[in-house]
Image 1 (cartoon, helix red, strand yellow):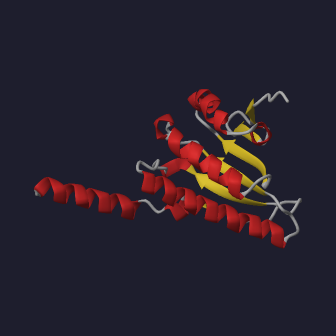
Image 2 (image 1 turned 90 degrees about the vertical axis):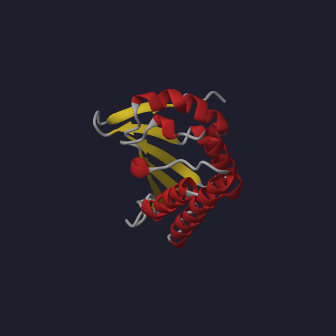
Length: 164
């Protein structure tokens, strides 16, 4: 009984300490010069979904944020959105490939050709190797829209060469 209570309290503290709205949100700045809005994913305190319910819940939340971002762009005359992912403190062990594939499939079906650009800022060097696996879940046109940037080196650190 004591172990079950401890597990229950751990789960409650995990849920209460993990406010996803602080990690995934529509960028408050106005749209850019092309009237495209951006949503942000900050991986600093990211906890990968572990259960099917978590995967569906987080994917639904991200789809909702993407919808809000697209609507913001549309109010300004654009029909695309950007994604900005801050990865400075990202741990490679935080990748749940099942979640990534599910998320990519859902976003691709809900927002066909709506992504203008996805920028990953300061990914750890080992992430580039993992990205070689992750990108297999993305179609070629989408892969062309992904860039990895290092603010420390002030340069683009990876670009996918996609052959047509």
